[in-house]
Image (cartoon, rainbow, N blue to C red; front, side, top):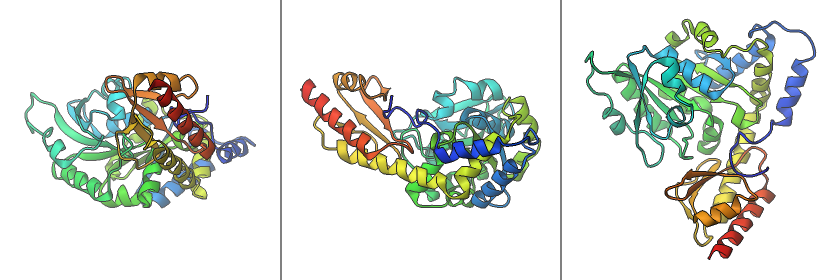
Length: 343
């Protein structure tokens, strides 16, 4: 089963599992009124700033939906890339559960620009049209690309100048930080981001994400939004203990650095294989390539991975915190062999 399909396929980091076992030793207050949750919130403030107010939730879709509920009224709209997770991979949950419309913009690399966003901020004040209220970006993007801190600041400035919020879907925010060589707040809090979905599951946790609210008004009533959205864990210490394990000794960063390094090793190993064309600049823990469908079919007999675009033959190879050099090298060799057979 070991392959390059998704960093959701990987198991939990042993240090995370140990933290959950330790939290299981005795009884503890429910619904987040426990010392693990208090410690997790303290650690998140250390990374995102003292104004950061954090709420732990079950999953990434829950984090995104609850944040958008806090930011929007039913006549609002969210501007996002066409490839965004909220648009493609959340089964319509943001629109169904928030009542807002997604304005999805095609991009070649998964990144929004101020110019693209301006094209969607139209008919302002017209009661017959939805009103753009949120810019939502993903960091790192679904295409494995990265926003620089300066690019995010430009989007934040545009949002605030138009009475909008900027949301960052950070399912792989740790990988972005590792690739940029920046602390988390340098490309979120310090450049004007209003809310972050901070991912844990793809970085070695069993389950759980953190909603980090940076605009203070968004926290007003958020505990009821979380409860109504079925994202309040009764035994919240098991969510929190995982974040404590990730954040206390920089396990989050070490795991992301390793996943990124394996992505770089994979990109280097396959770049010169005949018939393989890398389609996106490698920056984090994912490699995109275009292959002959026959090569893809042969490889997938032994190595799980996703076909990203059936029309073009583009595939996605995702590395994780537990990907090994030996696995990368074996996969690259298998790819070269499959290409040779298909030639």
